[in-house]
Image 1 (spheres, rainbow, N blue to C red):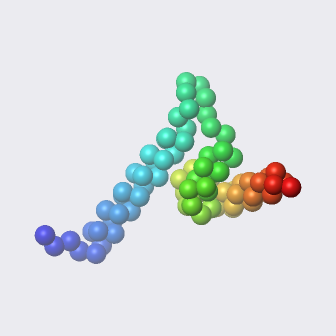
Image 2: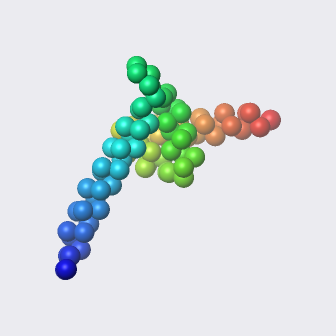
Image 3: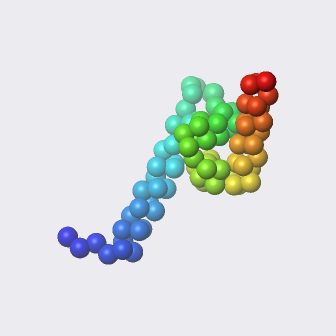
Length: 82
């Protein structure tokens, strides 16, 4: 089976979009009427090794907003260690 590079790239892009949507849905499912706060969702994704730009894409926020949230998390962790 011959698969050209453009077709493979499109398939990977589609798969990536689906996975991002699944991750976002899973992060929203806590229980009836409950949501995980944005800062906690950012923390979970950041702790999983994702960059702010990747977190932003998954959560539907700007990369700057994600970077600010990550910075706040790091700042809060630093205070807790002292």
